[in-house]
Image (tube, rainbow, N blue to C red; front, side, top):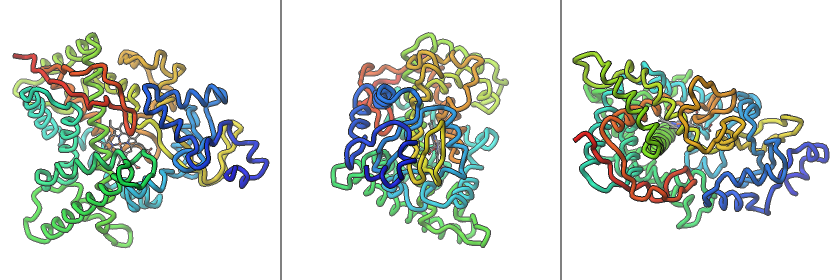
Length: 461
Ligand code: HEM
């Protein structure tokens, strides 16, 4: 009522249908109830059921009046229109990610830092230098797991993807601080989409603490690196931290520790959780669909057979031939919808489909509903990589990596890592899950509640 009366009669009448829920908590209880059940989609279905299938609904989420959007063309327009929309992550999330992180800085600063950090990890050519490192770590991890007996598959995959992102960003500090950083990143991640309850025991409170510990560790690393760089021959191989230390803006100003810390936290966190989870899901889906497994394995065997004699290890050439595997990964990304939604905020009043989105209101782009809409993907709950045969998604219907100026800068790296892992997994291993029917936990991201314990079995013996 408070939010709506400030708008005036005309705008109130033009708001999309929906309801702002209960005082203070808004629609958060029904959101959390749905996402903690087996059916997270029931949250959006309730809006569709009550307010029609127009796909734009007013609501009150994460402490702000918000418009939920599930219409592909509107999702796309919002993502592409930086003049009308900015990122809209809640202040509570910015407190975790950092004031100087990608979601805390100005449009221009974001553009500059993004360009600097994206170039070395984007595009297949740039990424090809990381292939040997990724591959050798994948091969040794799979071998080690197969000898360990029972493992927590997701936990091990997170470690593996964390090691890879650490190598790219903080190569020389990799070994001694990796475990501590990974642990803190995991705690931080749980708080990113939690309710902002800053009381001990709640995910948000723990995430704030983890951020503080992460920042302290990184501050030490950055100071050490600054010292090392002053000594001749101090740096043997340049990584992303070196690039961040070297970069200057138009006025010759360099980044301070806080800016570097926030950028590193964003990349280390975003760059391993997502790839680790999607690799796990792709493996689970392959294992649960023998026909898909067989087709994917045959493709990898063919690729191995066609490898030039004497070539040791994968190159971009083999990667580009993994066409079926690429569909397996796209289908996994669609079904899982790792980032189930993202936030934007209207910089001015704007009209869509006859409805007004008022200035200052959040826009929640609900990717999961777009990916699970039978109009966009028939039988959407089915894992079916062949649906991608000759199929180009309609504009606005496939956003596993977001879009526009905030498109995930790690999308190529993620697909490369996942492909290399699946290549070796398919050729030599199988996964025996301890509890294949374990329920899924959907917050902050979909994963089996038990982190997928089981055995990785070498089938080549
Ligand atoms: C399967 C793996 C991945 C998925 C599903 C994924 C998904 C996403 C999505 C949906 C966004 C957009 C969020 C928004 O619009 O607000 C995003 C942003 C981002 N991702 Fe990824 N990501 C993945 C892997 C990676 C990797 C490997 C890296 C690091 C190299 C990375 C770094 C980032 C960063 C830094 C952002 C923020 C970009 C910005 O605000 O400009 N991600 N990711």
